[in-house]
Amino acid sequence: MSDLTLVIGAGADELVAAHLLARAGERVLVLAERDGGGPTEGWIPPRVVRELALAQRGLRVEWPDPWAAAPLPGDGRLELWRDLARSADSIRRVSPRDAARWPEFCARMASLARVLEALYAAPPPDPLSHELRDLGRLAGLALRARRLGRQGIDDLLRLAPMPVADLLDDWFESEALKGVLGAAAVTHLRHGPRAAGTAFALLHRHVGCPPGVFRPPRSNLAELLAARPGVEVRRDAATRIDVREGRVAGVTLAGGEAIAARRVVSGAGPKRTLLEWVEPGWLDPGLARAVRNVRSRGAVARVTLMLDRAPDFTAFVVAPSLDHLERAADDAKHGRVSRHPWIEARAEGPRITVHLQYAPYALAEGDWHGIRRAALGELAEAVLVEHVPALQGAVTGKAVQSPLDLESACGWPEGQAHHAEVALDQLAWMRPTPALARYRTPIAGLYLCGPAMHPGAGTAGAAGANAAREILRDAAGRRG
Image (cartoon, rainbow, N blue to C red; front, side):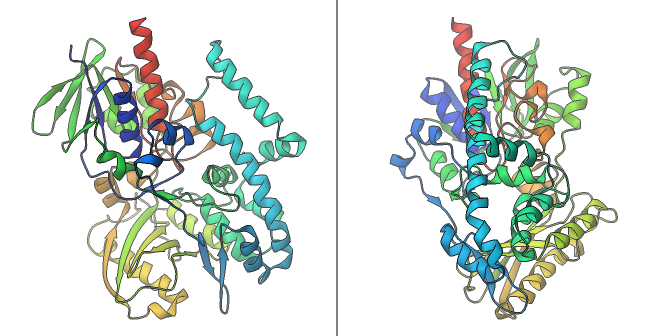
């Protein structure tokens, strides 16, 4: 049997897993169907930074500041900064009451986010396990939660199932402020801010961020690891995972070449890995059904606008109110592109990248080719120009990616960047399903390490690091 470990994918999670395995003495080959370089979005766990000596190797982490700028009725913008006092000054223009409450809101959310940070920094504990490792982790999390005090525990238990609209209505009166925060809570989700569990999604997005910042940073993590020695990266695509007698045997590439391997670690979504690449019959029918039912509904398009000059913002959000977001989500639920989507625009020089939501992957009528794709670009430009009139006539070109294009170009199942939606029933020991939550599959030697795994969305490299630790634990058990 070959002693090779094959890692499928070259994103942050896959490369972190590959380098941690190589660091432990494993022989690793990464199969990169597409370029995994470019900016990586998400919080990088400090343990990953330490173990891979990333700070010494040139890791750059960038926090946009302000992290959000939203147009106000009439004139001006609401700007939210890393500096709490500066954000409060901006909020004061629309609501002195909200400005006064902003520091306390941020402090309480940051306190809760630190509990999640501890949960996310390791594989999820099994709440029904009798192993000392799981019992110790559960006890540690309970102790950390207890340290929150009565107010913190009440906040955590109350917040988890809440719609984010209810949470924000409790704290604030400004529609502009609630719109910006509500948009952060539903990013990459098809439902709106009045859906249960979206308050938890806002907290999830806050993990690893400074108090008052609800947007993860960007880094050069994947680019840095792709160029780092110690792991061979080969540009090729797997089309089948070969299994013999219930154990992984390697992969077959698009050109027909078979590569033998002792272990395969897939960063692709569970549906693609287990239902497309593995021959039918190796999975229990119940598990196959559970994998098919993992929710990964895409509702986002990406539009790049080329300008003849740089705009006067770095981060711009058009989400005027919670009602605006809810109406936009209603369109997507019925298979329609929202006529009034919420957008988040990031500018780098004379180029703007627009996150446009809600544009559903599954359309009630027609498909995503031709005129429908082009219409997304026109819609993104029209919304931006409405709120930034200085952009009128400045757009010199557009590149549009529909949810279908994002599935093809980025490997996002159904255009869902997180591979599995952030929802209470798809988190921790239930992400993406209880049977797969520990990164192992029923096929010996086949593991999952992508964004669909715990902790998933909003983190960079955490799922890959956790998967690598479980793989090494299994390897140590066999040697023992």
